[in-house]
Length: 140
Image: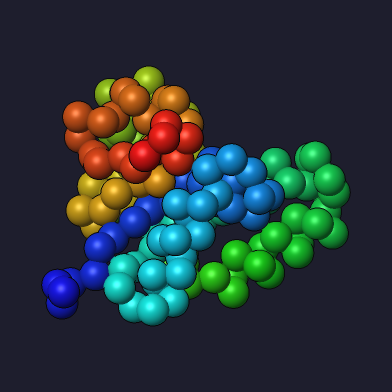
């Protein structure tokens, strides 16, 4: 067994799938369980968390969005701050690839951490040449 844990980056799609018990949640669950055991590390940008929260609030209300934030904060996810460096890296990704701005933060994090993005969002096809992607809904 390797001493270095594998690095995963969650995007909004992965978080929403996990939290909502939707298709694609199983690989996210497996990665989170392994993080609890210390065999990997899981990261997510606060920008992607913000996207999950606004979607949740829009669809089911503020109290549920607050509950979702509390649930996320209990998971073994290292939340990445929105630093100047993160903004510049995400802006560079967005300028060069057809991907949503929030998703660009997940891409930039994966590049910085040499991690694998977990997603089912087809926009990430545009960046598969620059990062590793584990697809949640493509019959791994």
